[in-house]
Length: 269
Image (tube, rainbow, N blue to C red):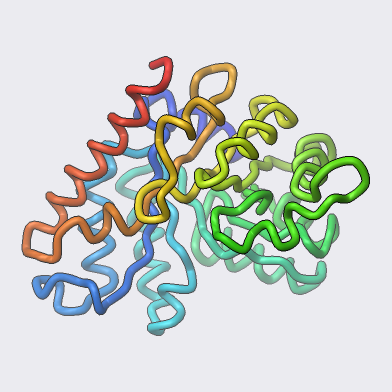
């Protein structure tokens, strides 16, 4: 099923644009999970599933501690127990076509993701394998939330910044191949507004709310689409590590509810 359809259903059923990013750092786990990546992430997922439209596991946090098998199990758990929530694999892949085909198999066949983040720098042929996969879809990096993102993304290319060229290419060409969205950081609301004006109702994955300092009100006003939704607004550390005690899951739920409600309070729903 195309990820645009899954996402629209998730927005409607949850009345939420919140995404919880799953970035497990065992050094920050509560003692009660005994260092288990799977136990920690599963508890967070089950505690917050009623507040979100999406979950976004970041593959590097699992691979760095040899927890790829646990990531497989976590993705299966999300698909089985919370089937109406969008599953985003945050991998930021970008390589030549033949290699991209293997990354697409990894994302969609091994992990069962609905959509994967990709880097557009290598061009159309590096993204096509994800879009042509029968279960494929991509969030393309456009104007990312990190401080150094402007080093290249804001360079003038002709009469406008490079990230705006990316937005146009994705909206006008790549989205004709398969379901696309764009990654635009909450830390840059003016740029977020410019991207929304270019891409219409294309979905935007918006990191940077919470620990990175993005403001909810500015994000909602800049990035909402014509339906009042249009965004997957990610918060990771602020929710994951709301408490280091045995109540960590309850604390994560409370923080997720507060973030979701803040997003709602500035929207049209």
